[in-house]
Image: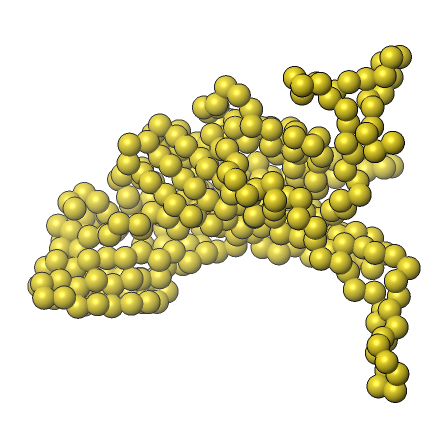
Amino acid sequence: MKGQLYIDNKDIFTELGVATLQGNYSELVAFPPSKTPDSNDWAEEDGKEFDLSEMHLDTKDVTLEFGFFSEWKYNDFVALLSDMGYHDFNFPQLGRTFRLRFSSQSSFEMFNSSERSKFVFAHDFPRPADYVYEEPVNLYTIPNGYELDDIDLSAYGVILLKGSNQEILKSPAVKKNLLQNFKYQDGAIYDGQFVKFQTKDVNLKCLMRAPDFDTFWRNRDALLYDLTRLSVKTDAEGYEYEDAERMFYVDEWSESYPCYYKSCKTEHFNPLGGIWWEFTLTLVFTSFRLGDIEYLLASEAGEFIMTEDEECFIDLGD
């Protein structure tokens, strides 16, 4: 327990007999959510038009559980947390320091020789102040067929788990057209001339693996950076602009989906014997239509078959 956590350069176990308990790292490693961008919702178009000329990350809450093993040091620990707004929490095993502020206490339990309590901290600094982008370390030689702006997720040490395809292909909700429901007649009158879809949240079930924390933080930070960075694009009139909209591509059915990053949740995190981070990555698909999917003829090797003149692929829908 000694050397497990330093708060403002103080070993809290040596100073107060306080130790962090198992499971504390899960919320620390998760990406912070993004702030909701401005948008326009046009009834005659699928999805929404989002202003992604800026992309900012929001603050997030982090719950840490502590055990108190010295005689009644609980009050001293609370005094330490509340003597100023922000404190530096250094976790040597993680190899990273987090600047947190005490927000609330969510539980407190007393036992014969110890106490246990959960504290909620606000994490207001979603990106390290001195962060410099480094390309991720590719741990997989075979791409897994899911790309973010032409970069396979395997480049970040990430594979997609069972259930992700169902999330991608699931139909979004339909936008409601004009509906008139009068008291003096049966049923209702609905404008059914066209059907347009809403945006939808897609929860990708991901697994990131790394041999050590240096590699883990490099790949994890690179993925967050690439999810939220602004890239230069060109509109129909040839004007350049910056935008944080991503293109998510699925090789299995050769389809691309415009999207932006929304949030992340850790499902399981194991820091021992090689890092194992299972998490749910939520993307907002800004425009989605099942009818846009094309089914192309391919060989058993997965290569698309072309017409005799080699000018186009063979569309099975035709």
